[in-house]
Image 1 (cartoon, rainbow, N blue to C red):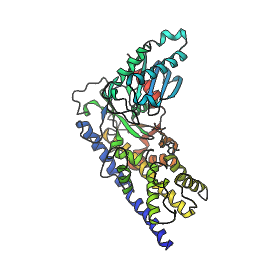
Image 2 (cartoon, rainbow, N blue to C red):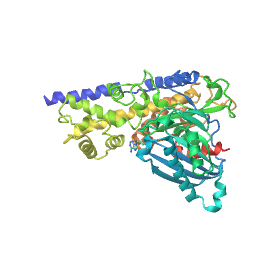
Image 3 (cartoon, helix red, strand yellow):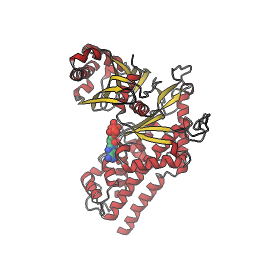
Image 4 (tube, protein in one colour):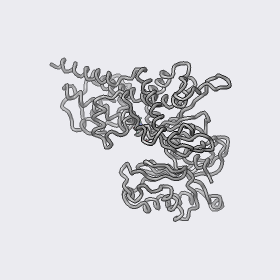
Length: 472
Ligand code: ADP
């Protein structure tokens, strides 16, 4: 009897592995789909699930910037003030940061109360940092504003809030210009500062990347959520005819978490996860890739296994609770190097209430983690190569024109992608699978020219750098 049940668990794992498999042929289909969807999203408004939003950023920091700049990042639960002093030649001389939790009650009041609280905190920070003799220098200082909610940008320094997420509900702000709200609050507190750039997090990452390395053409963020942006030619942004930019290019915020393609290896677990999520039919790519979801996919597979076997004992209520198994815990199981997988046993016990799991079952759980992470990392890699393909940097000639070989010398062009986010930086197996997949898809001739570079603090430093390049 028990042997028969064990066979069923193995079968469940095999079926999952098969459904989630990512052979390089399939990855290349995802690459193509990404490039095609990018094209469609640029061709017309609503032309693709990829929104391909204009950012109006047409000039990226190049390291020559100097002076004092600020950034303000309003995230989900906290906000952060950053101050940097730039000394030219790619140097950041001073870097100060202050974080503050956003008081819960302000998340549902009026925009005035909310922004006044931020302006007041900003004033305290500025007063503390700039001693009196420097106060005159502070006048008119530029701020980069990273506002981590869906915004429709209308210029590099203006944009309207589309909708609130993450538990916020300040109704009078929807469809209002978020920069105007901040600017008014700052003036109200007597701060003579100028909000010079409204910055999406991924664009901040691209800015940091470009500040240190001018071959940086795209940026990817893979943390709790995921997004990407890249530098596009203005004439390729068909939905915005006659777009004039000084550089001839513009950064496009892809909102790639919402990418979808029938080539994505979707399993029954993904379908259930989506159906039970707060945003069904939305953010399909993100739900297979980002830190918010990976642990929960693993939990769902374990749940299914517990239904077909008794190796886990009866199904526990914790096992049925969404998001109890976080991605860092899943990573800890995946990377458990103890001979008896004691970390796996401990996490199963503490988070899912599953006790006395035999070693062979622990091994199987590690395998489940491996399948989930490998798929996520390889799909993210395909997305990255998809961007390179769109701009002709993948060595295949792109969907517009072949531009990886420079015309003059016939040599390959070095291409850098900036990456940020703790799923990539903290989860070694994820990072290794992603790096390997990028090289595998590109092939050994092209891969050496494509460099993935970890950058830090796009939402702080990156936003301040954009304030510098867009300063009045
Ligand atoms: P954000 O929360 O703003 O997206 P982070 O880059 O800090 O930015 O990402 C945090 C997310 O990264 C966590 O929610 C988690 O999913 C994932 N993460 C962090 N550390 C680890 C880890 N050691 N192993 C696996 N995932 C991790």
